[in-house]
Image (tube, rainbow, N blue to C red; front, top):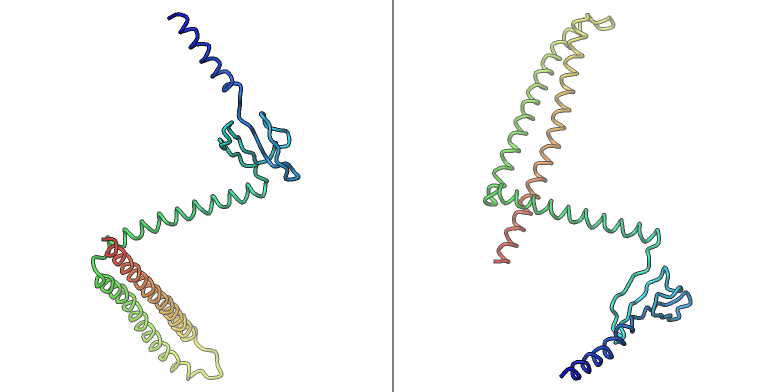
Length: 207
């Protein structure tokens, strides 16, 4: 029995030692494209891509060549672009969720657009009234100025004309700004409706 155990131990060592002694092989293509291999990484493989191959011929590991400065910059730019794209996607998901919480139906979008438009139209109407009032005052000062042709206008008449012109210009500028607001509102709600219908259609298809 003792002899049998000793024999098994020697057999085990005979099998194990060669396997331990036999290491992996490292291979790469040198500067001329020639395949170079060694049981340690050959000098020709330094700074190059190489493969670590087992005794059975299987690739254990593949190591990329160190990146050049240009390649590192390109990778950084790509990583930055990827992060920005992911951030934009997260933001779009947040906006989509908010959109669906804001509107229950397509009609809700039209109703809110009409309310927003009505508020702007009230501001435009008020500005037009002020323009008409300023023009009425200016007409009064114009009539007074008729008496002073070829003469210097009295200070109050000159001031009245200038004030009226200033008021008219200010209200016209306000109307122009409100017209832009109106365009922005219509564009916003048109986009909201388009996105809302698209999201609803996607949900219907996924159900």
